[in-house]
Length: 208
Image (cartoon, rainbow, N blue to C red):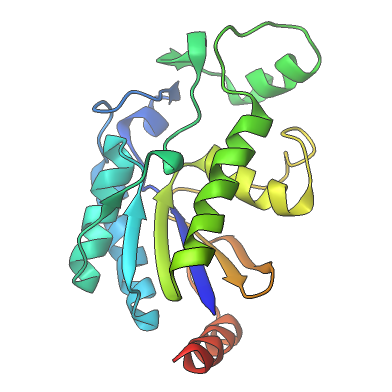
């Protein structure tokens, strides 16, 4: 039995300033983001994770490092967890009330170089499938909003706009339970409810 705990990085400077960025070494965590990472690290420790994988992008790597410190683990970088490649949107500010994704879907704008949603789904699927082949127990994966949404939408066979209602807040937990197939146990939650925690611990005991 494999439990994949996907964590969105804590609040970063880019989140506060509403800046889209796939840059590797820009926009670190804010103090609130560091606190979010500590809280989620402590929450995950209740499951005794075996490994922490992370996007190489600074805000995610900082989050994974804090989670690792809470659990005695060193983060492992995997490029498949990195932010969606944003093309000419990179380092641009965005307006949530006139979201670029909706304009793109309606063909009101054209964005050169942006990573196709199906390609994003595919790289996240490949990451998950590799874990299913090589790992068991509880594995943590620190990533970004769109890659985590892509993992969920891939399991539900949804395009980007059809998955619009899937919200992944900073420092949130999305949990997959994988045996013969993967099932979604939580989406974007700040902590594990007792019901979910009991289910997870039961699955982990079966694995052990």
